[in-house]
Image 1 (cartoon, one colour):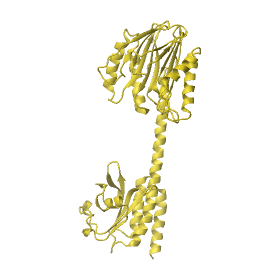
Image 2: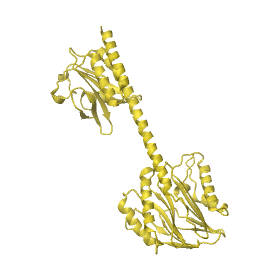
Image 3: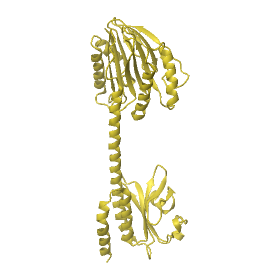
Image 4: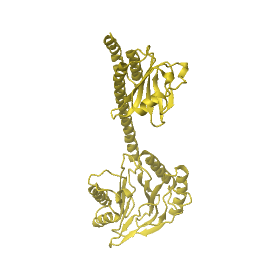
Length: 408
């Protein structure tokens, strides 16, 4: 008779459980089946909320959601001890919580842990008030139901996580496309200057940026920056910084130092304390020969003269957005034919190989020196090739951005 009863219950619920489309409906049907299998009055499914350190009823016959601190009551003991607990006299069990929800009186209960595939308890299946009390055989029956519920719950969570990951990747792809369009699509022409740039984020979207802004006098403003952090948060700040700079330099500034000073205060006012940006800003005149610049916490660009000498463009100040009272100085250089300026983010000079060795700046500098006779675009590609060759398959740890200027 018991075998017939079990078969009828399983047959009744199997199809409905298989057709359930969301986690709550699925667990509600499992609770109903578990109740009917052992002839209990009620059944509940408790889940572990590790973040809040709580246990909560995703399904509970006859009551609304209940939340209790981790370790509380018999359900808490089931989780902490990872064991089945059978109690037919709750009045004399010190673990039992006396203040029952909704005035419901629990006299007997059977509590079974739900274990994930890694063996960690993720919840509890609990049956309440069986006439004449629960038997050891009921533990076996509910144990099978609990294992089925746990496996299905984990599968459902994995499906939801996979769908969430898919949607997140779709959002990242959209953000990446938008970010690529923020980079200048057409480079302003400046007499006497050949230049090129490249940016490759480490994680689809990133916080590195570059820009070239044409000036009415035939010159241009160029920027290269690196926002702290990575991912979408850094990309949002990057877009804000780029838009702010473009809004401020519609005309050639009288002083780059004053421009960056005011810009620093603006960035500080709308970003959080952990968000700032290193920045290199340069103003190139209409002849492509005079360059004024500010290096704000950025890796100092290298000027390789045609005669073989090297200069570091290090005049400037702190990263922008770090403190509101930072002050900036500007430097100025004159370019001659064949001179090359290399500007790059630390994703280049700190690129790592599988042995966690870093590519140093001197190696990059020598690379540019070896290819200084090539076009700015060719020099840029040579640097990227060298970085990738050095990395030797190691994951890109930071955004990589390069700008090369060559006087012609």
